[in-house]
Length: 249
Image 1: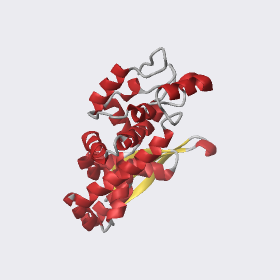
Image 2: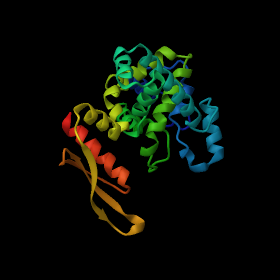
Image 3: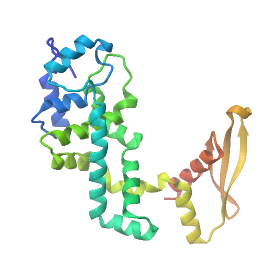
């Protein structure tokens, strides 16, 4: 995103980004706020004050909008879970509550992997206002949530933000990914139903005591099915379980 000489945001860039996300802002200050990173102007408070005044901004960066966006996204996920029949069936089959499933769905949707995928779809990195050479890759998930907050504040547009979430978040596939939150628990459910015996065995330990890592094997009916790695035994077990679920589905 470019700034004009008077520190206003380039209107052509703003228009292009709005077309990418398919949301038209009636008040562009919310969008600008969501796209403003704290590194802008390298701590030059005088320049930052001018930038805020010229663009009618109230905050110095996206962080306040991020908090709002996280809450709005939670509401949309809860609404989706309320109406979706597959989620009803999932809650009944697992014995979980709708609140618990909604929380798990949100965890899948707001994982760094999920949000970075969305950031790539909308070319977000090229529209964030920040200082050159600042690595903002780790902040893109937060800025996605800030963007959701900005869409919500745009004429209190809950319908708009729901449309954005439904367009760019893979809600339908999120249910299939719930097992990734607890792969060991998912495996236990599967093997209990099958009546199979399974266990995790430490195959190898690496490194000194203060920096050990482990290789763990998943054995089903005394046959090794996968191998996992981690700095803790439980992390290695989780890795082995995840790999088994990926290869067996």
